[in-house]
Image (tube, rainbow, N blue to C red; front, side, top):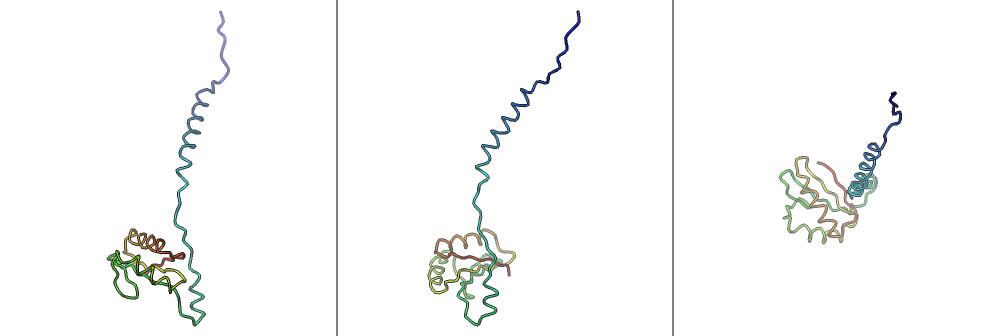
Length: 128
């Protein structure tokens, strides 16, 4: 009796693996669509250097010890919203955040959120 050999490849396990990978990708794909921060490079620097007009940009400084300063005056975090809202009425070109290199990321983000909630449309960030 001669035994007959089986020459075909069984692709069922391979198909199962591909289906599992497809399901995993379909579940993970919606989680990858996260909204980030829209940051733009400020182009006002060249405009302000070339013109003699006074800048209408509100500047807030975040120090290395995570304190906020507006016009050289220290501002409490609780008062930021009202001060930014008041000053942004006259300084309509946006907000410039000057952060020292050792300041915490969370303080800068809180300042950005506060400014956005106060109605500021344009926010720029620089390191001092």
